[in-house]
Image (cartoon, rainbow, N blue to C red):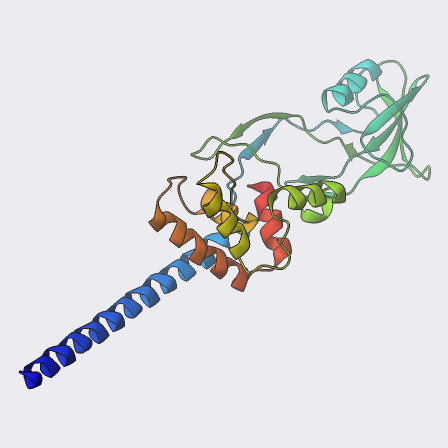
Length: 257
């Protein structure tokens, strides 16, 4: 009788061992799958931007038949205010029959054009002089074209991507203080925040326990459904994301997402 009990115990332990190995193997395969997905979808800022469609750019040159008022209206349509702003670009100022234009940079089909200052003189409904800020004559100056439309991606979203360095520092501090105070110290998830969120379920004041990294994973890779499976997947992917990318990349993507 004792012998039989020992055999049964041995078989149970053996089955449990094989089951544990099978679960560990499945978990490893699932983690590798998630790791591959994180790296393939997160690389290179994956946001789908619309293709912009522009009108033909206005090309200024001496002898061009165009009224000064038409050039001024073109600049207004481009969002250029009629006020001088030293040290900035994207404005124009009028002085009699001359315009001073602080032209914004733009990437044309044949290459980028840097921001620059222009002086354009008019007489008799035509351009009579075109010079740069130093007074040197210019053969041609192209104003940035007017946007007239766009071809949007499948989700019909329009985006203007920003770099983290372009975001006001006080906004970043306020975001972290509100959403994830331990952002720069945790490795994807905050155990204390998860405990607080679990305890809050028993009260009327429910708290969220997701870090910025977890929120990014949920918005970027997963669905908003509330299940234990989705939450476990979110935790694993958050850790993997933190292993492959630094905090600034994660925060920048979170802001754009």
